[in-house]
Length: 341
Image 1 (cartoon, rainbow, N blue to C red):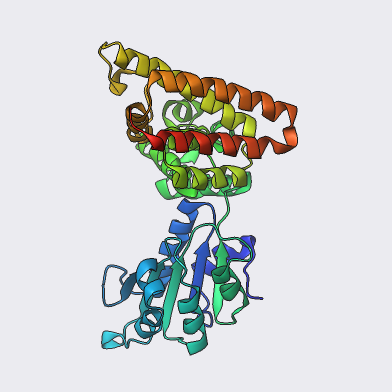
Image 2: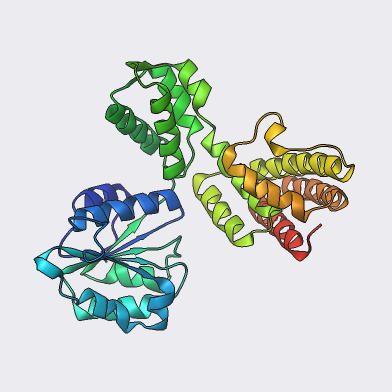
């Protein structure tokens, strides 16, 4: 087995093993997957912007023509420079192509495979975990220790000192998605530019609750009729330990807000999402606009009653709470897709 433990992944990313040229990066934390993929590629080629140094392949192309991956990996680089391939699976079955690549023993080209969350028995994951010339790098949601390390790293890079009480406040505000957490910390650093120390008042002024935003992403995807996005967000929430009760509470709050706004629109009164209070986070605006186009006030009222029943059922049978929450939200997403207002 060549599966790399989560605690050892960062060391591999910093210095990729040349004996394992094929690297699979996967997991529920899409932000961390992207960050590590970019880091491995940066360590593998002289200039990632050079198309002769870095070939980009999509899962569609490789699944339709498995031999293409081996052919691309065997291409001799111009001027003797280092070369790499970046393969995005996009949920396509690329296992046959990767199996052929591992069997070919290509060692001169780094092949980085970017994937989503893979089950333990997924063919692609099994191949890369068992092959001696491959490495599988899991990317799971950040723990409190990971978030603390990320904060220290970004503050140090910005030349700032984060006060202990501000640090204690910031850690729980960050969620399980690495990209979202890093963005919030960098936003804080930008806000505090020109000063030496960052205090509690700075954190309170500019940092959003990323864990709350993650729950809002789940609910927004459901009401916007995006089941694939919903399932991905639910997987992240489960990994981060979010409770079914919190998810259903956010769904109830959202349906009540949507019903209020939709009623205003149907009554012909002036309405703009830019004017709502408290202000919406900018990243939610598009999905909420989509939801308001898909739902009528009457249908939202019916969904309120269904969610109330789901909450009651989840409390009666706590062991099935996660299943009940997922089933309820998937039903909302399916209902949203059936017909527009």
